[in-house]
Length: 234
Image 1 (cartoon, rainbow, N blue to C red):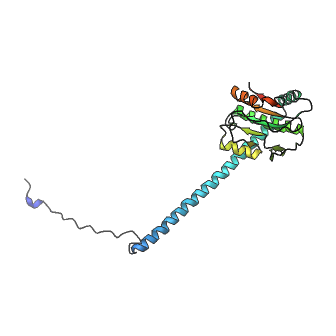
Image 2: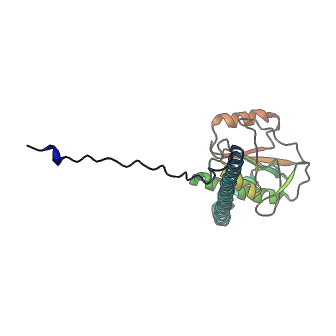
Image 3: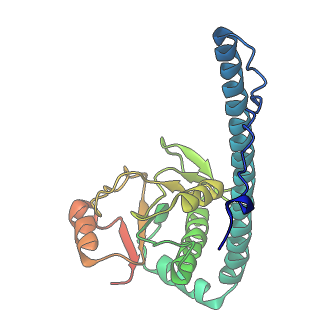
């Protein structure tokens, strides 16, 4: 049996309040608010600086990515342009045009996402090659439309456009770098041929388009079918 003397009463020492770590604890409320505003500004500056730095790095990476893709396109253009298939295709197109006719405009509809699809990539490369070859055959054409310069340094009128409803921002940047004008309006194939210039013709390259777009294009230009040429998958 334990005796009462064996028990010891322990009395805890009162805890001492630690001094505030706030360096501004002696400041007035007005000064506190002033320092808080300065701290917020400094934080916002640092955040904005990091954002600007990240955006600059992202832009540099984007430019490099675009340039690498353009280099890939240039290599593909050289490969396709020197192939017998391309020469055969151009000869067939030229041989089926009207006598003394030339192409003043080459339009591409529905090429697909050429940055992610292999087939769309080569269709896009073929469009660039066709546009250069056929417009080069026609020589310099006087037109009231805006004159652009493509990757080859050739003069290209704005009516030689490309339209793809699912085109990505990256592909738009690539087209801009290559001098390819992008049409912003989806007319579902109801594109009117540009005003006739002498004896010119217009080629529509439609590699991935449904029947309805062909019907709409032909119906829209039913009075000028002698000027309309279509190279497509139908």
